[in-house]
Amino acid sequence: MGKKIMVIEDDTDIRETIVYALEEEKYIVIASEDARILKLLSHHNPDLILLDNWLSDWKSDANGEQLSKQIKSDPATSHIPIIIVSAVNNIKEIAEAGLADGYLRKPFDLKELIDIVIKFAK
Image: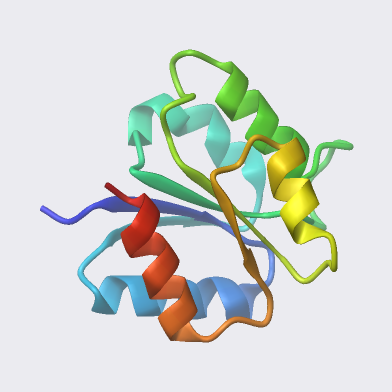
């Protein structure tokens, strides 16, 4: 069975592109437009989370950095690698502050996406 990747991205086109690319590589993909899916994190038990830093429909002040930090601070989920995905200039600093394992700068090409997934979904 393939590795399970959770994709949290509010931009439909980007989310669908990521899902398509990962499924072509035989990954199992759980995709959501908002962070509510994180309430089911223990149920899904992903091998990697690709987390958009800015979720426009998220109903709280939390962003990807804060959500990543919450996941990494919980002993039950701290082992799950997280990649922050964003177009902001300071994405490296955001990923570090959020205790994420890495980052992917938008726009990205599909090779970059697959390379980072291969690197972190172990």
